[in-house]
Image (cartoon, rainbow, N blue to C red; front, side, top):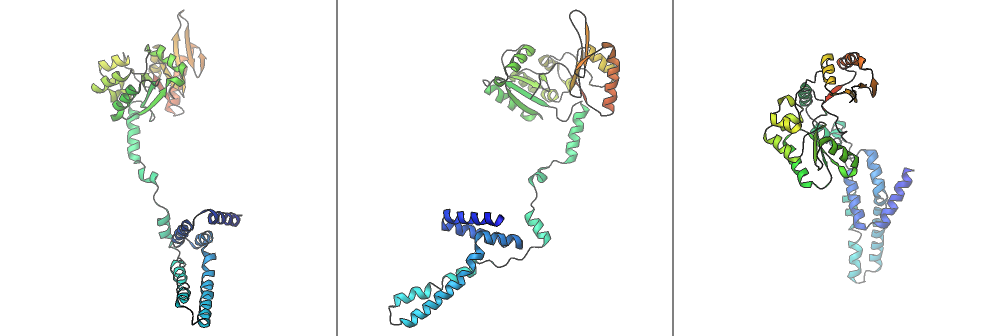
Length: 331
């Protein structure tokens, strides 16, 4: 099967490619075969036709020499111009065949072959120092962040290119993953953002799921030195002006304890447990509601559920993360 495919490839190449291209391919094949293992060299010789062409050349040159000799003795009195091509023509091919025909290549030693044929992969050379990764993850964990946090999402509708470019420039010196979302593709999200923020005109900038204004708000945060703390979610470190921009009136502990969970639930905060939101709310008529694991639960179960959450987090069965407000589901 493989031999048939190779034969077809050879025929197609010989029928369609110019002779100079074929010669260049043969020279390249000889160069590769000189350093390749013997089985691979045989295949290369077969594909380039070296085995087939190398054999008939000496015979052809020999027969040409015989014909030249007989022709020379039979027609000694002929013009010397006829003898010239007969003596020069057969002499030219043999040296070419001898000089270009590859010698059997010695197989490289295993160590040399592995070094020559196995260059260091780019990913290995660019791999980050594990100690640096652990240090960064630890630093984020100390502030209650998961390693994948520091997410900044810019919502626009395609008509704010200048503002979007300026926001990217402001964030250049801050460690963050910056994404863009085109609201023309999601009109429902555009309406939701307008209702949530009270701002009708994009772009909107969300940092870790919380709205932080737009271009000029980020410029103010950067000018006051608060931008890094905002992106890192260290809201207890930001200035009063940054709190005003982000509508952060109080700072809360992210501790996962029974007392803190119950306190913040009563304040209306959302605890995302194993990627599902849990919260407590009071309706206008005074009816109390408690939601956990995707459905309503009795309000009386809140202390028991808080204890379950603390045990699960301590056992590392799941994660629990506080959210200050219902965040727009980010892409």
